[in-house]
Image (cartoon, rainbow, N blue to C red):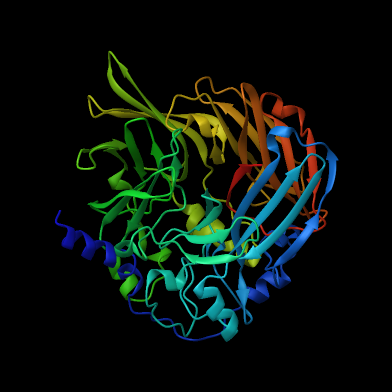
Amino acid sequence: MERRELLRLLASAGALPLLAPLARAAGTDDWQAQYETSGAVWKIGFATPPDDMPPTRATVRGRFPDAVAGTLFRIGPAGHDLGGERYHHWFDGDGMVHRLAIEGSDVRHEGRYVATPKRVAEVKAGRRLFEAFGTMPPGVEPPTSADSINVANTSVLPMQGEVLALWEGGSATRIDARTLDTLGLKTWRADLAGMPFSAHPKVDPDGTVWNFGVSSGQGLLALYEIGSEGTLRRAAVVPVADMPMVHDFAVTERHLVFLMPPLVYDGKRKEVGASFLDAHVWRPELGMRALVVDKQNWERRQLLALPAGFLFHVGNAWEEVTPRGTLIHVDYVRSDNADSVFTSNREVMRGRRVKSTEPYLTVATLNLSTGRATQTALAQEAEFPRIDPRRVGLRHRHVVHATQIRRELPGFGAIARTDVETGRSQRFSYGAQAIVEEHVFVPDGSKPGWVLGTALDFGRKKTVLSCFAADHLGAGPVAQATLPYALPLGLHGAFVPA
């Protein structure tokens, strides 16, 4: 592709899907009232902190191991309402980044809203000015670019002394790792300004960062390769027919792997005023497509077919050469359909629990030699899968994930460590009044390592940070820090050793 054409596509990809006409008539919106009158005791997890959260010391039971001395950064939607109006989807809220500094028996927390251009403008105006992923507030104007509606609320990527706050549809946002000050948008190269940079980059064991971005309206998938020192090596776009919603991907030693659910963008829906989410259509006849891209030559691509299903997150992938052919094994969290994104993650915003199809840890095998793909569902309800970061793209056995769905509560109640080869699993339940957030794996040399993560104790209206021995997770935390308040439920995080 000629450079001029590439730049044209890259420049348009970030913004054009979002610039469709907006057509929602102003009227009474009672979502905020419904949230306030809801009797759900767990709704505190979806409350809006009125301001930044200053440095505060937690109460610590036990002692955190030396290997987890450092900082756990977490991020998630937090600014859910403004000017008396409430967003209609959990994923819409303005991002708040959290810093949990850990040193032995001392844990300190600080949380700050990411000062995106969107948040700064809306707080100043006292109302919503722009559309969001799943909400079209009344009276908003078309965005001028993808970054004008960037909420920086989904994940974090520590890099070169900074933390990048990541979103789906636009640029990463630079955060000072020490102060949590917002430093501005990250531009990898001048012609890539505003390009979609996804919230789930993968870091190879050698430090190479791989990522992607989706341009739904243009049917393009952007690819990035970034050196361990933070310098962009390559960026390009590849066409994808029937562009789906892709949130995560995997890497192996030689390939990039995209599992593409049949939740497909329909530009006609966007043109008549649908939110970005509601412009997507479930088309199970497409099946789950697995797109495999050669790391060295992005023009070498292969498409394989799996049964229709939906996913948010991938655990890991690895490949091997066997007498049956070259195989890629990828574990991911699969649901039968996309009900969770359309219903469950909406209704919590008004304090309602609506059950959707349950997600299960699933292992797929892609045979690149025959073009055939198979998969096996494990008997583990799951979300937020994480592995030992030293095994990204390599053969692994264990995945750490949230588990234990409760009928009356949103989210999950336990944390588990599952062997994806045998299906054996151990878990720790946080109890009847807790909602588990993502937990991460922290290496400890040649030792089994540690599992570190947060959970909302809505009974006590507090958030707890727990550390488990990875090989004895079921025995419970070896150390736990309790904050004197509850944090809004978040999405993803990353640990940085001291």
